[in-house]
Length: 241
Image 1 (tube, rainbow, N blue to C red):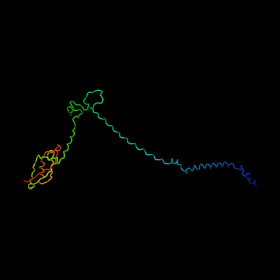
Image 2 (tube, rainbow, N blue to C red):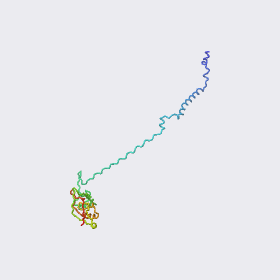
Image 3 (cartoon, one colour):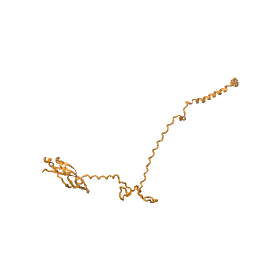
Image 4 (tube, helix red, strand yellow):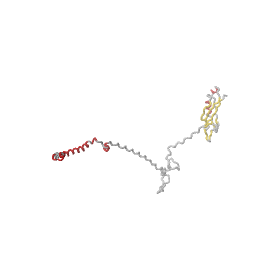
């Protein structure tokens, strides 16, 4: 019985010499095909693999270009140079001259004329304008006249030096109209009446009173030693005879 149990091992039924000659090359070819499949298939499936971040850097869109630099500031305006000071030809020289030249009479830039300069005066200064000024400047305007002051206080009333009686209007005499007309008179610095207006009126007598007052004359009124116009009130009395 024990001999039969190990009979297959001692006497195997399969013999080495029974294998075919193409078994080994076929096995090598099959293994080679499997290895090639393991290498090629992953390469063929590369399009489904996730793209690494390093590759995305080349595929992503390029960033926008930086903004252009600001324009340069405008050049500062050139500061004009001050003109050289005028040199007075009559000024004393600061350096000693190398030689002394005779005077020609035209050092001041004026053409000399025998016997003097036309339009000049004897003993005048060279450098004047021939023929004098084309037009002399106008004189300054006179100062404005002082404003009239009202009589009273330190301002004394002027004294009448010329009196003219009013002419009684015939229509007023016929109507038996009489009375006093009060007039405000402005007396100029020369003592003459410059303006007159009625303060208390009698219609038939006003014109005659104004005509008479405008012919009156007074002594000039002075203020601080200067004659000034004054304003004063005068009365003209009309009385029937």
